Image 1 (cartoon, rainbow, N blue to C red):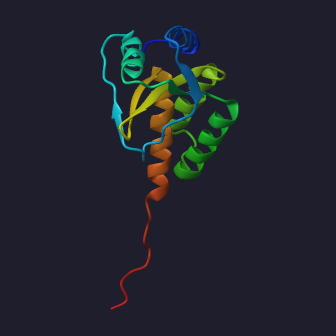
Image 2: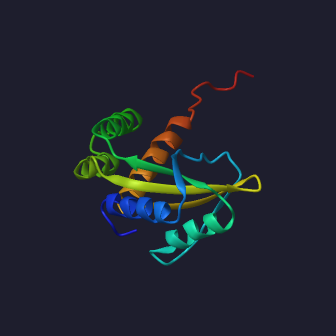
Length: 154
């Protein structure tokens, strides 16, 4: 998605969902739930998703958003510094610091509805949010690396 802030898209979604006589429930559907991801190349494909929800008999859709907070960036930078120590000039820190200009913006939206025990999801994100997520995954992956300094004592 080429938008910098998904607030206007969210407003459009809210109006469209309401216009179809459906309700919204604030809620995020996590990855551990059986899901089907709606794939659509059309930027307005989310409208088709809402229409599918209505056609399936769903009376409501779930809606979740991610707003980047200053504390999120501070925590990310701290974690990168902890993982990259003593290299305080790592490119990951620069990438994280560039995210400051997106504080307060919506970077991710998720719509969902349940049908026959499966959650159907529509997700969209900005490029900067994808970068943020990538940095978070990098930090998490680095934190899982265990160094064994002990030699075998055979």
